[in-house]
Amino acid sequence: MTPRATKSIESRLFWIGAGLVLAGSILAGLAFGFRNGLSFLSGGALGAINLLWLRHALNAAFESPKRPRRMALAGFFLRLLLIPLVLYVMIRFLFWGTPAAVAGLAVFYCSVFVEGVLGALDIRSSQHGRAQ
Image: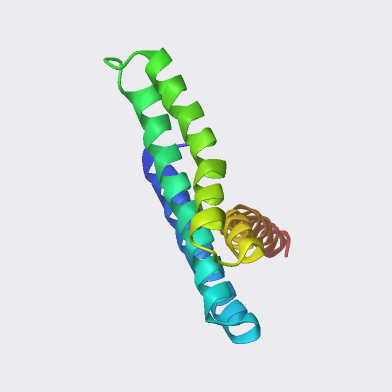
């Protein structure tokens, strides 16, 4: 896969995730109140930051020969540890809706599933068009 194709997929994942989080935030806000809508949005923002940090860590690990692999691995695990820590801080100190924040985080990653389904439908439609 070319770097250009990778950036295209990353961009689509980000925008699909952002759209899902925005729609979920509006629905949560209308159904459960402003604080829960804001919590959903903050959980989605945490998911987006996590995806961007993951991309940066992977690029640093595979594209930069100057950076030691152990440092890249440490950054990767630090990112994984910070997710529950940030959720805990949001839950404990901000008094926002806990389920909404966790749902926002999870919904952002549903963009991977949506992209996979859209890709499968695109492949099937192009194969179906060639068969006729």
